[in-house]
Length: 39
Image 1 (tube, rainbow, N blue to C red):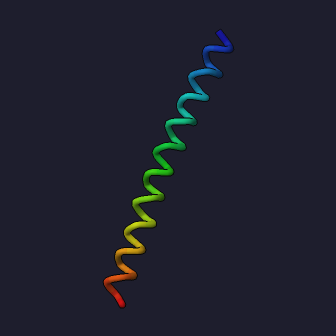
Image 2 (tube, rainbow, N blue to C red):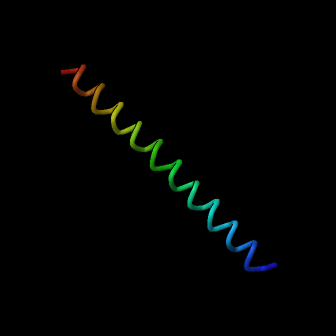
């Protein structure tokens, strides 16, 4: 039982990391695009 909880928590943390990385990449690209448009 306990290992199942740990396993599912690890999976949710992993999904959270993927989601955070995706948001960060989009944010970074938007900053680059805005920077190019500002020049």
